Amino acid sequence: MSNLKISNQFAKSFINSSEFQDEVTLSEKARQTLLSGNGEGSEFLGWLDLPSKITKDELLRIHSAAETIQSHSQYLVVVGIGGSYLGARAVIEALTPEFLGSESPKKSVKILYAGHHLDADYHVRLLAFLENKEFSVNVISKSGTTTEPAIAFRLLLSLLERKYGKDKIRNRVFATTDKSKGALKQLASEYNFPTFEIPDDVGGRYSVFTAVGLLPIAAAGFSISKLLEGATKMQSDLQDKNNTINNLANTYAAHRNYFYKRGKKIEILVSYSPKLQYLQEWWKQLFGESEGKNNKGLFPACVQFTTDLHSMGQYIQEGERSLIETIIKIETPRQDLYLTEKSDDNDGLNYLAGKKLSEVNENAMKGTCIAHMEGGVPLFEISISALNEENIGSLLYFFEFVCGISGYSLGVNPFDQPGVEDYKNNMFALLGKKGFEKRRDEILKHL
Image (cartoon, rainbow, N blue to C red; front, side):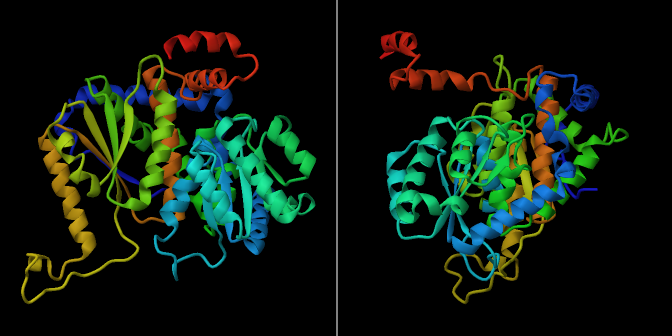
């Protein structure tokens, strides 16, 4: 049993209970479609049982590779875009101390990222930084031809060859790619790089519990066993045949679709901890790429409170009423501070003397929830007891499962992304890639 909790105390005043139960029933039908494998995109359901079915041999290989990286590198550059890096980054950023010190894992390397955009300044600075550093690369791509990571990897591979020599980089490059085909697989075979498989039946945004996510997380020094343990508990809960009406995934999916059908168009994922920024970014891709089809779907957006209350707070409170909020709440911080009294009280904070900083943050959250609810924004809470590997594993799997249910309830295929190809084809045409000449002539009319 996972320790994730949900609450609709700040949404129930907007809900007609009988109509909401209709949505819960629809979510259960979608859950059965998901579990039966009879829905659209069923060839990409390998993620459903990943947490519980990953083999001991695969985990040993991942741990061994992580130890190799840690033994000779200060830095690991993770090369990937979208689901190829966001899941790992979500976990790593959530667990890594902002100020490295005694809290840092004893065996770890610092994780850097490349191939997630095309900014020249960033890549110039990255290569210059690595010039005198000991580093390894984990390149993640099913095909090896996705533009952003392919360019970044070409640049990094050139640096590695110049720095160490082509014959001495075998244990500095780890390729996570297709089992048997593709440009990256071919290159890995040529150089004899260690490889890890991206399963054919797992899409990128659902791949965090494969080597795509697990190798960088392990190299960063965190327990992938505990991460998988949390995900496995959540998998068991959500797939339980007897857990229908009270199924947490059904409840959240029903909440989203209930308000979507009643004119809400934007879902804001809210966190009161900056540690969750990249988990929010991962969530944004998961739901945006899964549901944004056929002119449907809630637009997923993220805010960090209380920071964004001083920038977006006005709009959320009094702007167009097209919003719902989902809050990720961490019940217990890792560490805390007590606020003390000052004799002059120039800052007017003596009323907080003796209170914990976490208590101030908690009451800021409660006050904001009430204000937004009174301003016409329904809010839904998802709580975890603490920020650790097991709870993050539970949360990631929970969102993946909800996304499958919610997509099917919406009437779209949650596991494809046909619209992503449009910008790529235009870019290829503008850059003069062979085979895109006709498309180039068409788009030049717009420029």
